[in-house]
Length: 437
Image 1 (tube, rainbow, N blue to C red):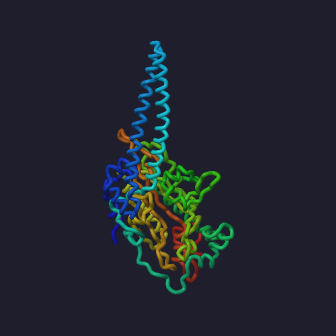
Image 2 (cartoon, one colour):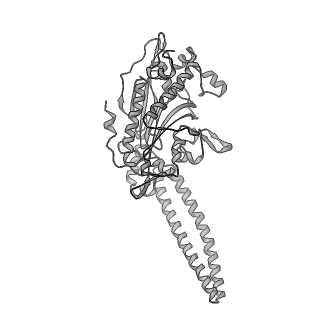
Image 3 (cartoon, rainbow, N blue to C red):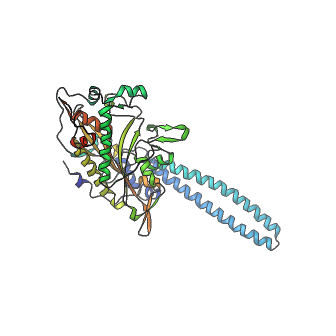
């Protein structure tokens, strides 16, 4: 198995995403990257370039029109002083025409800018050169695996049966209160959940991440800033009366702290961590693969977010991967790390590593974390920049789950079941204050 450290240390210079000049100047590279994603709407690139040409044309016409209007306005004063009232009145009439034309051009320019923005919103991030092409999870690269894995043998039961046996989680009560996908944690189940959250937060803050307690709702601008909108609008819960969205992850409010912010070079890197409830509609999710904790509409997660100088972002990605790797090692769970292919990456990512734990009772891998570098994709939307060496440039943003609770809980319960109960890993037992259920 390849060592992940060797796989993410050498990269080509990162690119600035979704700036039209980049699309225009690097069209071939953009098309190649979108093909890696199996992205079908390649004509959007030409549409963006064409609309930008139209925008520039309108801007030029408007500038010329305003310049001529200002010139004539100055002449009116001179004509009035000279007593040439008829010529002054004629000039005023011309000014009125230019003013009306300017208003028309301004509206056309606004329409063109809005159209260009809508086109750009539909183009995903371009994968890093190291990302392989692919169409699904079957094409992902396994870059690390901690253990050889096997089932627990006869008598092993899945976490939803363990939860019922030991009165840890009541799924039916959650259905009664809210609906499927909203479980109720009870007794030691609730306490174990709380212990995991505290362990993750402490591990993150010990590694230099500043804890943030963000809102659990965001406005539309925040959703667009990090790329959840318009891409995942159908998966987000919407509060219609207030025009707010329930957050799908703490990444959204935490990263938006830096929207419309000009940072100083000395401020970087910025490292934040946050615990939050997460809300995802997960429309169309049915069947055995979503039983129990495998997929929920509400769940708890601890997130890490980084704001980096472009030349440091892939070293930061490596550090984040090693950090999450250390957490899973402490949890004593068999896990593996995958570098996602182009077709399986999220809309906003330039490179993503997924962490999966082995579910011994279900005998399958469960994703518990994604660690991603977005390069300038989010920063361009957020207008998050830094000033250094006399110039202003976009930052790189990164984020990762450290960790998502539901499938961690599922794997802990299943992998540690014994004849005498469920054994709690030593590091978590210190927080939970019990070592056996």
